[in-house]
Structure formats: C-alpha cells, structure tokens
Length: 254
Length: 323
Image (cartoon, rainbow over all chains, first blue to last red; front, side, top):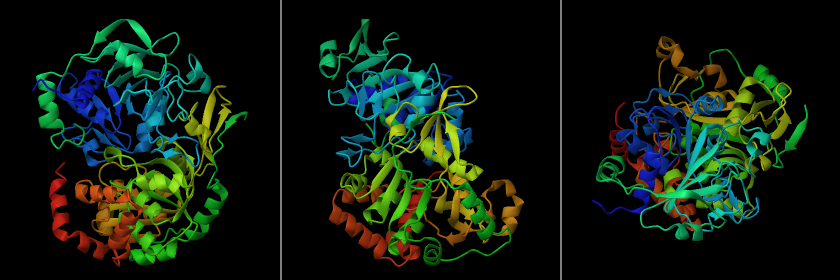
C-alpha cells in the first residue's frame, strides 16, 4: 500500500490544496479526483462547481466529463453554463482547477494550437471553459501531469487562458478582475507558486525523492526558488485506499 | 465607444438582430401546430447546405446524436458550426460536411484529443475562429436577448480573444477595458430533450447546459426527445418547460437519441462504443468504416438502435443509477 504512482501523488497534493468550506470550479481529470478525495478527507464542505451547471455534487461517483450526470448527482443545484460562468464573474468562486498542455513562467496556459494559428502544426482542443476559470475565479490552481522543458516554456506561443500575462499589472491592464490569477502549479515533480513582486513561477516544494535541481532542469525557463523549499508528503494509506477503492476503481485516471 | 483591440478571427455569422426579428415575425407562430415528424423530414425541411448550425449539450451528454446522424445521411454540405462538442462534431467533420468552425472545445475529455479535428484543421480543410465556452454561450445569450453583442469579463488579455472575432472596448461607464462578443444567431439549432409534447414544449431533467440560450438564438429549431408526452402533462408543470413550443419547428421522437452519449436518469454513456470509435478515429479508413456501418448503413434512428442492440440499451439504462 505504501507504493504509489505519479498520478496518485499528484492527486493527493492537489487535493490537499482544496480547502473546506470553499467553492472550487473543477475541470476534467485530476481536479475531479482531487475534489472527490478532498471531500472524503478534510473538506467535506467543499462545493465543487462544474461548468455546465452542477453545483455541490456529492462526487460519490467520479464524473468523466464536466457535464455528465455525476457532476450534479445529489447536488444542490443543476443549472446551466451561463449561470455558472456568471457566478464566477460575480466573484463567488474561490478556486479554479485547470490542466494545460503548455505553461509559461507567468502561468499562462496553452491548450489551443502548437505552431501557427491556422493551419496549425497540432490542433489542441481549445479553451473550453478554461479561459473563464483562469479569468474569473479568485485563485487558479494548475495541474500539469508532466513537468518537462517542452511543456514549461518561457513564453507559450498561444495564450488560451491568462495567467499573469506579461507580468505585474498586466491582468488588470487587460481588464481582468483585480486580485485574481494563478496561485499554485502542481506537477509530478513538485509545487510552485508565483513570486508576488515579479509574478514569476517559483518552486516552493518538491515531491518525495525529487531534487530541486531535477525540477530546474525539467523547466524550460529560469524557475525562481523560494528561500525554503518543502517536501510534499507522500500519499497516506487512507488516501490511497480511497483513491483506488472508492474514487477511481475503474482506473480511468490512476 | 473607443475600440482598444479587435480580434483577427473571421466572423462566420455576423449578428443581424433586425433580420432575426423579421424572421421571428414572419416564420414563427403562436398558434398550436402539431410539429411531430420523422428525423428524415425534419432535416430535409429545415437544414440547408451552407447553414450555420449548433448542437447542444455535447457529444457524450444529452446530445442530438440521432439528428446529427441524419444530417450526415442526407449529406448537408458546407456547414458552418458552433464547435463546442465531442462526438457530434467529430462525426460532422469526419463526413466532411463542415467548412468553418467557431471552436471553443472539441476533444474527448477523459479519453484525450480528437484525431478527426486534428486532420480537419491541420490539413487546412476546415477554418477556425476560437472562443471560450463562456464566450460562445454569451454569444447565444446576446442573440436570445435580441441585442447585437454582450460585454463579458473573460477572454481579455488572451490569444483566445486575439484569434476570435471579439473586440475590446473602453467601457463607457467605468472606463475599464471590457470584451464584447457578437450575438450568434443560428440558422438551425439541434437539441435533444427528455420530453416534449406534439407542439414542441420541452422538459429537460438535470442541468440545462445552454439549451435555453441556444433555443432562443435559433431561426429554425429541431428538437428530438426521448418521449412525446401529452400537453396536459406539460400544462400540469408549466415551470418545467425550458423550451416553449413557439421556439420549435420540428419535434422528433427519438428514444435513446443521445446514444452513445448519456441521458441523465435514463441511460449511461456507452463507454465501449465510444472507446472503439476513438480508436477507429485515429485512422481515416476506419473512421469511414464507422460512418458506413453506423450511419450510412442504417436508414434511420430506429435501425441504428437495432444495430446497437436493445439489450445493450437496457444495460446502459441499468448503469445510469438513481437520483
């Protein structure tokens, strides 16, 4: 039981960032597992919010998409996408959880194209609701499954979802709501925050068995390093049991 | 109003609120008309080559799959599409019926990205203009409100905006930059619902996605439903009518119409079918074989469901779970 894989660790680290009594805009994949785990561990009163209308689902069953019936199973409300996006626009949503194909030093995300816009070298899915999550939630937490130089770039070639754009003050200058922006980046190697003065990504914790040098080498830009770098705790037995037996027994993700 | 930035994307369907008003005045009626027809008749009558169409909700969730399959059978070409979806958009692209895509998200969520979208766009066959999900839904909402645009506070600062056809203006009230998205009036909307009566009064269980906005943004609206119910039942619970009859042009009875997607409280998604399609879609010939077998090889939705197998549908009904 003490053995765990990278996905399981990632889910646990992300899950521990979810605070009890807060609202969290949850995207597909790891965020769903993290939210389901958090609700069974320390955050019973976490309110998961799903893009197409589900508010406060029980997450007894793992959703496979942001609109499926599990996103509103035993929920408080089942409305629609306008209601959810407008709730975020009004400032009600504390956290937004997102994944991305590429991220840069300011936390900007690309999930649209690689290469020129059209015709592109690789056409990726597009924004979906990610742009609203990154624009309108108070704190955005970004989950990247693979920390490597080709996905951690100095500048993403296409900003699908805004991070701090070009640096301090840029979000506000663009008209985005003040006081919002990326808060944490969780990867298979560690956890980053953003330096408050420069808005640049900064290493604050490494995963068990990972050195800070490994993280720096896997990052395609100059990653800042906090004065104190912590080590993330490995998954506990209880977390692993819940994940494997209750949350994702069909192994969609883990 | 001071325009600070203009997206460089092509506006595939420019807003025309007055044209829409005229359409509503001349083509929509407050009279009760029996609109029940077959899917063949609905698509033949209301979808033309070159139309701008939209589908709701998305490919694995309460999507108008039986109607999309019929659009493909009838080979409606040069479609312009609001691309927020999965299986339905993949099928339309695979059948080579789409010229332009206002794209917000086309991929397979948990299962990965769309090989069909990649082939269509990377080859230059299909032109795209990008938006966010909120952005495109507020475009529907603007159309539903009868206004030419809505101000929104997302897309700002991003390349999603740069490659869209949105604009950033100085808000005349606060002086702050704000994003304006143009109303998106659809030629045809396709929506699958749980229940409707013969006149088109529709009830949806669970989340309503963007059905309310899209229904009101559509010049022509084709609704398919799991079952047709009596108007007496509709009138007993009028608050459950999310799409009233006067918005609707055709009512098609299509039990299991969302297959291989789910229909909440009725049947779960057909994971095996979807995964097989996803595997096949990596290869153009296998994709064609899928279309041949499941769409061109079946005359209508009833034959399609026969091919899926009623036993399989019973299994999916058992898998959806209760409330």
